[in-house]
Length: 212
Image 1 (cartoon, helix red, strand yellow):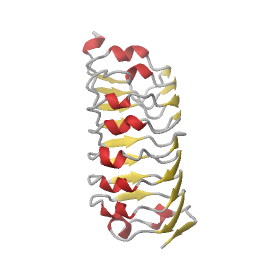
Image 2 (image 1 turned 90 degrees about the vertical axis):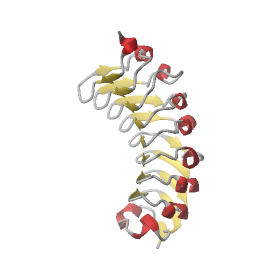
Image 3 (image 1 turned 180 degrees about the horizontal axis):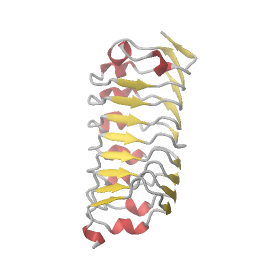
Image 4 (image 1 turned 135 degrees about the vertical axis):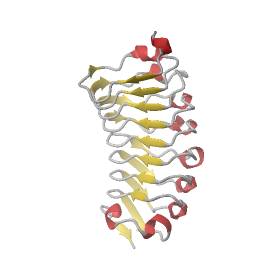
């Protein structure tokens, strides 16, 4: 019975059409991997509207999904990995993503997401190891509280419309080994210390008002 399903994966096929609403009936589903297909349409809001199951992995990357990311993501309290990259998603990064306190990896890259990075992301997602918001339309400042993500190893915010100065707090992230903030509208001096002492110059390209 579908209600007993814990794993559902269709990765790297040529599946088309919309994502079935009936997946919301899989109340024990832990891993949903629909990546690398040709799914179209919106992400079913029913997946997020209530705790569907003990979701650990949600991967809908490399499809042709559109519309906004439905509100209710915060219901997935046990979610570890979220990958919605390489779609046509719009709207903003959902504010309730900060309720997914167990998240270790977020990849929302290569979409058309706009608006600001949620301001409390750095204080709420303390288990985060990888954050990729690159190739979107995100604007505003880089939140200084990202420096609180003490386990973060990879941060990619490249190819957006981010403004202001690079927070010096990023230099305090001990395990941060990969940083890319190229092709934004950042200004001011590049901070010293931490990841900034070994990151390549290419990570800062396309920010004509940056110096240092």
